Image (cartoon, rainbow, N blue to C red; front, side):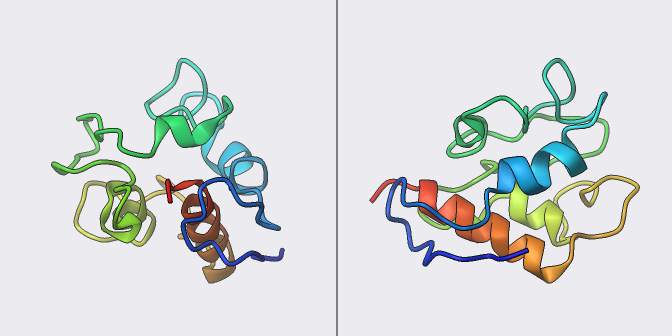
Length: 118
């Protein structure tokens, strides 16, 4: 799986890896997890970035921290990346699964950066 693109916050630039389709939907968007009607955020319904960028993390039984899911000025400091990297911000994600491999984490990073405002 390619990670492609520069992903440098170009506000809507195209990246070779479409994280919602290639990673979020099959890994996170399963029934009962981050699918429509499941635990927030919805990582299936497009545009997924509207559920992540600048949105507060919802308190859950799996824990949370007082930060946005994706910080629009410093994405790696947001709860999404904290949880995907197993850092102290509630339960690691994917929940009860192995951590995502480095190429998938890079794909998510590139995709998020491509969606940030200039």
